[in-house]
Length: 603
Image (tube, rainbow, N blue to C red; front, top):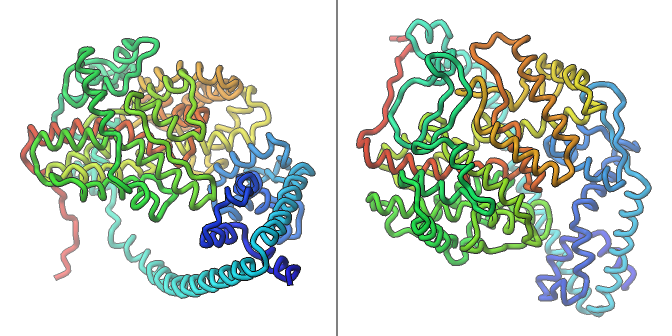
């Protein structure tokens, strides 16, 4: 009986067993098997298992990167990073057969197969241990629970199958209407020129249509109608000045938040009071993490944060008070909890979707925002002063960028309608998550992974330049003909944020022994603008933007790619808040631009 039961149990997934054990109130710690479960949940084991399973299914001993991406349902850039880590641990071989962008294939090494065998043997010992510890009666009851779980899952599978049929019918219908929409909604460029309308509210030189006035910040890219080195000003100070004024052990995010929100530099007492009050706001309502953030976890952390922001409104008795003081309070509270919403949202996704360990670290009120982000994100809560300093600089550089950027203008538009703070910030989040706005550094990182995979010598300028030319011609990477991280809607000669960040990137790269990557970045920074100038008809200069390096910083800090755009939001909410306050104080008129109709009258 026990042998038959063991064989039946061996067919079950280990996570189903864990669920059943929880139902019986037998914690993993009580069984003394926590080390096994940690190993079974390790990414090495999970990824290797899926690779070997896919190879068996395909009856082959190797898989191309594109096949692995399809198998895992992940972007090829992320798959490339994951496999590279396995390669560094000697668990897989990474070979390029020279057949183009899809010519990189992976083979599992003997060490990788040995790791799998070790874990499978440990799992077999676990099965035997369960029988011994539970006894026959309890063990058979456990199997009944697993059978019920399996039936439930089968029922869910049937419902999913019905939903898929419905979705296929809907998809077929929408596909049939696509051409109709294109035919009836396309507006000729000729009409835009005829009526003097600038697409994207920007002219061919990238200058935006004047839509408002602000005292919060200024972006300078031209002087006397001549392109110049870019400048970014916060409340009368260049961002260079604000960063250079920081002491060796000082953090600038909170000090700069005070400046942007209230319009004046704080003295020491004012800064301490602001940080103390902000520290007290670094808490969420009781059970909010469990009931809201961990409910329906998603890889899209921006969506998770937006859901949390709108839910926080239901805890605020003054959500629609409409007073300036209530708006300032709401903004400060959101600034304080944004890191928690982002990091906890990621942990929920990583646990429930990726089967990784779950841990929730509370922020320390006395620490800076940068320090709290790193300690909340990391299992051991440890970080170096340099890591925290570099992250603090990145946050400062992303806090504000004028009233015309898409998300800040969205804040202004929604605020002008009289809507509440939570709705205005949620709308800004929806804007920022767009790949044309806040997700640019993710594309840079995916491109860099692709370059590393296809350039044999990362220090060979000519080889790197040749591959960049292929990218620009649409013959490599994503086929869109773009070198990501180059150029900006406003800046031309230089992006001041990129120039500031570069020196800190070099310091961090040196500490992390990433000098080879810095060499590659430097070559691309120098060669890409030349290639773009040669191959494109451009109206203004092209230079690296802040996204070119920010993703590299996050990678060196061990920050997962799912948090790249949320980190942008953690910084930019300060600018959104400042513009919301300014809009409430000074405008008092709903923003409503005009659209000219070019519709055909059919009656």
